Image 1: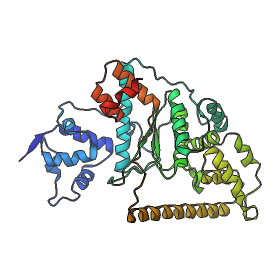
Image 2: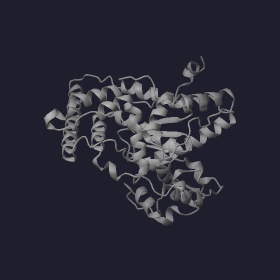
Image 3: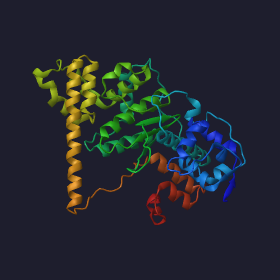
Length: 387
């Protein structure tokens, strides 16, 4: 029997971190198993190697983690899950895995920057919900709003670059189509300076809004994990004061002076075709979604709740039809042997992340191998980062 000695306290620490019970863990590792694994099989000092591998499919720590004799103590510095008890989302396992991954990345980058004597202190001031979100948005726009670009991905990239200038890390995570349990979150903010976004390949306007919403959390220094950033929902008024502030901030940051056109519109109705031409024009000039703009009309009492529901429903149906049309085209192209030009999506890299890893390599803190691993490049591509 191939068994391995483990430090059971480390496994229990992971259960505490992920807020899983022993029963939760057993349910997960018994999926697809012919002979059920019992509590006594894994919560002991000697565990079958095959069982330990199934456990690590959940936690992704590597087998060496479980055999380390050092006991771990619950620490607020280790994870947001130890710093907060409640979030805006009922997090599934996929979400907890992503949050833990970037919490570890944050700690690693903090260590590397200190060892490299790289200063990544906060530059922007702190605010509270008592500060007017509109005024704050106009103040922050002066520093962080880039040159506008109608190309959504390029605009998103330019925002991430601007944030880097002010020592804010921004990371995207991309989930493959075959991932067992996809994270049920859109984005989150980890103190002191990390924002993480889910790549919204089909809705980059939503990702842009989420990024600026999480910037709002950064300005308030209020950590949060958001399942859905409510830029387009009728239940806006049911949000917490912090979430409303961050949504308002995101709207004003992105809309800029074009908010005056929204304010001066007469009430949207069927008679004026719900100002659809104007709304679409503002959407094009701000990269705010039409959903977000109609939500703002609702907040400003410029459209009735019933009309808002009708418009939202029509926009959603149009979106689904567009998606279905695109899906059928892909299927037809595949049937007729036409190759797709689409490449595997890659996350946008923050210049601040690149700078931190570059500096650590130059200072001899990390090896060439680790540099390439962190940058996700082959060794023959390393020169382009030092030209």
